[in-house]
Amino acid sequence: MNAEQRAATKRSLVSFHFHLLMLQNYVALNFTGVAKILKKFDKRFAPALCLSPLPPDFQQTAVMSGPAFASCLLIQG
Image (cartoon, rainbow, N blue to C red; front, side, top):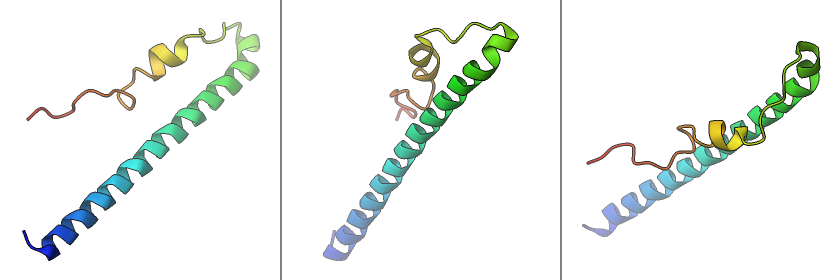
């Protein structure tokens, strides 16, 4: 592999890493947004609808176990 190919490979890996970081930030932002929406929904509508608030472990059981937060191998080679 010559120097030009190494440089191109390095640029590709840096770009890929950047996009993975952007995706991670997007997932974290969406998680925060959903948490705030659910909190506001509970605050505004739960008393009127006689709904109980979300269980304290809802975030861990329902959200964190979702596919966006799973660390399993997607494609096995």
